[in-house]
Image (cartoon, helix red, strand yellow):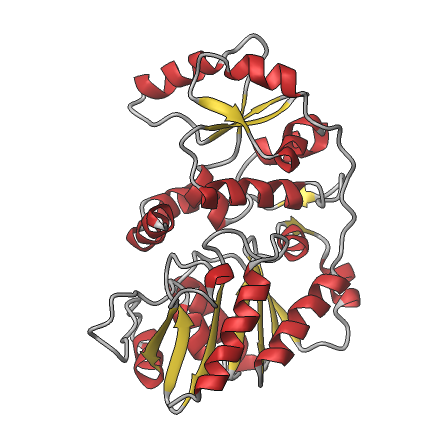
Length: 341
């Protein structure tokens, strides 16, 4: 079995990566290590930032996971059936890569590149010298693992840029994998587009008498920067945005109030939007928003302001948005994130 020190190394790396909002947000991302036929992988719904203070890793039978992947089975065989934690949605992804340590992060620079089309040549130039590949978007879990398996069968990449999703790296040890994450983000760095600060007085006025409040300051740039606003209201960029915030972003129209939006939602038998954008003023969120969801809103702001102004964006199709919203595995992960104490 894995040595305690090795699992501790994974905990430490996971906590560092998970505490960096530019790399991981809320319950997003996952990490793993393989040893003696066992894959230790982050539990679904767990926060990497808490890797040193909570028991967040699940032992999975590695050969059984690979057989399940070959047979198109999404449920992974845990090595401890009596355990209460469920393996990450993306366990099969970790199982199929040959590397001993695998880190999957939702790094903001990588997501920005992975959400654009027509930038392949520049990306290749920046990543020159690394063993890397770009993977087209597929729903997280089995569909993504299947397309990654096809790529891995043709080459042995250490770095995978996942379309509309994030970054996956593999290495022989924890230190090597962590260093590779930072190296890729350094090479793919995109400058943040300046945007005015939020108008707190205007946001307070908009929220008055409702169950909404102003969001964290960084989120206001989604609405005060015209280009950011245009990007995020046109569609959904990546899966966690959809799961925790809903498809695209809703902006208040001229003369429209929060009460008007709530009434429309109620008429459609839907909950009010988790977050709303007030053009020129900032972002507001429901008072009952969970920390994980607000972390996703921060991530969206960090990604949007890095998208080149002339970028051609590849948004998630409507059918993919619905698949994410109706997927039991994602509902489970979201519920665990909400229940986190």
